[in-house]
Image (cartoon, rainbow, N blue to C red; front, side, top):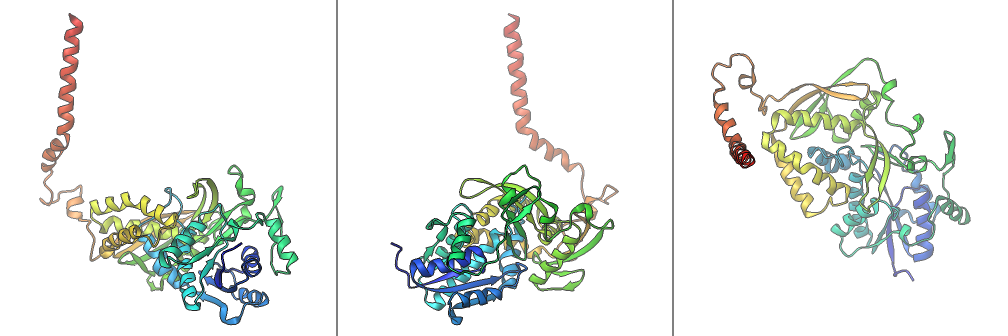
Length: 423
């Protein structure tokens, strides 16, 4: 028997999975259901979720639909990009970074409505179950989490559709042809930072995605034959203006998505290692994020001290794994974020990127207040005494000392070996 639950807050999109979950919670747990639908820029209307929830008997006061775009970019995406985070050297963590925000609001709504449980539609095979629940437990340790995919026997899309049909649940879900194969549409996750595609024919890592799958970007082959230069203005590591126009965080990302998508920037086809232990193939589009990463690394290259830059590079993979594995609210991520953010005080200036057929190349960077680039020292011409080239000799010899000692020892051993052989 399920543990008794009085009221549960469900992360509700109005799609097939969460529509079935809503009815299942009502039937199996016989509890009051509160729905929460977050608008984080997924590119679809969220208001239809209200009508669907009402049709399923949810009271109007228990339906929460919120625009979280600015909070998403300002408090989650921007801090992550200050770290230049890439999971396994490639993935810009578009799905991963959205989950802690949703978990945060689930918990806040649970407190507001005096609910004793939250629920989500993440499967028992995926990473999102971990991200939602680690976030929830960090913020509300006593909360009960209901994960239907770990409890029910509706373990296929066909079974979900049959359940929906039996109970009169309104869903929009159709099978369609994919090339010469046929099957369910891709499993997609979209927000203001990216779109991901998984499942269906993509479960074969040797199958090339169909051209019509991509939604945010043109193919690089079809992108304009003329390049475009975009200028990014940074203040403390965050973009505050694009081409001289001041913008809010969400508007910055929206603008860069449009520009990057036009030039075919930000596609990725990756087989990654999931937190739960399996390998999984995903295709991603992150046009604005790819531009942001290129620009941030460019402005840091002239404003960060060499060893600070190196330390950030060393810590980045660990930071990326924290985000991927759901540890956004962990003490270690918060500690590391503080270190990263303190390094960004000097990351101020402008970067110019040339966009062309899937590439974003830096063609200029400037910081009038914080640049550590000294042309007097770096020049190959006469520097007027700014740099004493003779200093390099002592530096090189000191760094070579251990190798010279080892070399002398090897020479002595070889000499002794030759004498022994000669006897």
